[in-house]
Image 1 (cartoon, rainbow, N blue to C red):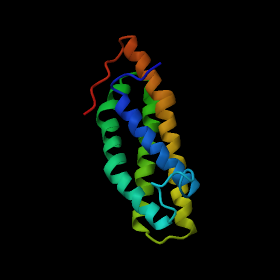
Image 2: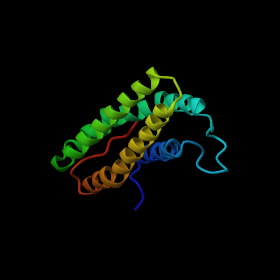
Image 3: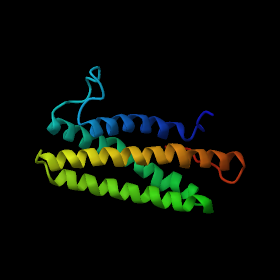
Length: 149
């Protein structure tokens, strides 16, 4: 079943974020053909910071201010929204930790890997649990999915 038009921009964001997550988990490019992601950890750290500030934080804001309040109107989705909000908080905290420590050591590499794992888990939860339930509730007329701007 195709995504509801409201959720398509978020799913597109998720696709890009999953690539970042995979790269972080691998500690480098996704394949020999992935020339966009550096092998140097310091450059990966820089790319992650830019991605987080320019892409992920605005994405979180859209979800937190527009999508999650609509989802929270459904009793059965409140625990899931709370889980997703907690994941946002965890990832923001991890980025604070990453930003405060620019030393490239094994600890930083592990933190980058852990961030990739957290990001992937978060996206999978939204795509596999939240979005289908929102689409179903919208189809049943229990909510109206807002336009995301």
